[in-house]
Image (cartoon, rainbow, N blue to C red; front, side, top):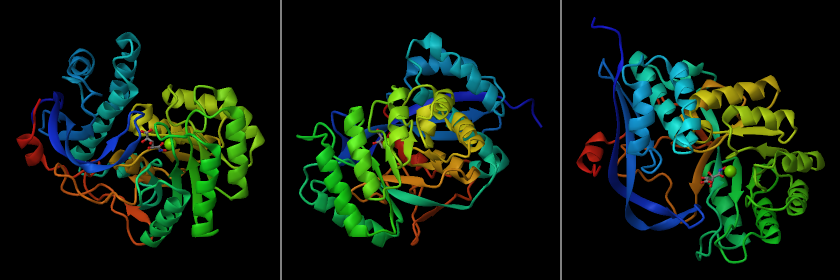
Length: 386
Ligand SMILES: O=C(O)[C@H](O)[C@@H](O)[C@@H](O)C(=O)NO
Ligand SMILES: [Mg+2]
């Protein structure tokens, strides 16, 4: 055996691939014509030649951040020291003056988990603890739009909901119309879409609403009361999440569970404040929001200590890993889905999607070492542009 294992390389390759969705000026994703996009792959390689990989947004892990913050912590470090390395990197955020985001930290942490899973030949969800082998998925729709036959009317949402139930989903979360769609946001339009979907699927399907993020307290209360009458399962992000007191005010007045925070800054620490403030009935955390798999697990365990569910934000292998390793999150968020978008289509830079859905609406956890992402490394190498 050689000397101690150390991390030798940390690289981000920007490559071109094909996409069939695009984000609007407010960052909400919608179907689009096929077009070329740039994505990026973070690779962390150790002295045994094992590579941890995670797909990243090219703008989120910029060379300056990689060279000045990430590499000085990782190069030469023990690849097993995830917690220690995470804390060293997290404490560099303050001095980065906003350049080193939670999302960038999350990518690095996630790649380190992939690396150690590959080193021992075990899936990450098994390393975390192996709480279940499959997890039920809810269908998370794209936001509403103005596309004929898309999600442009309550009737569109209703017919798509029926298709989703036929596909095997037992739960559906609506994202309704948001700016820049004209007339959005609208409490009345949101209620109309929720009424149409409940009417279409009947009482046996769990329904959730992820509303526009900037309603006022009174708008959120009106909407929440309407969801109660429709027996919705949770109410998500109707207001700016920086106002914990607004969510406490709302949760105190509603019987429908209020879930959050999704995007509020502060990792698992802010989530402790949300719980103790009574600002949520269900906690929320995601590896891309709170700085990776490591802090997401801390949020899950924190929620468990309060007998709370913690629902994981976002699709993909990192979300599946934490859901396989714990059991106080009930659902995998599969999406974003749209009647005119084939979510199961494999993009050129992958050999398979990460989350195939079975006939009864579940996703089976990977049996592959690490996170289980099947990247087409040859495509990525051939299409690397930076
Ligand atoms: O970009 C976003 O805000 C998220 O993708 C969001 O649309 C969606 O994932 C969400 O809110 N899920 O709960
Ligand atoms: Mg959300």
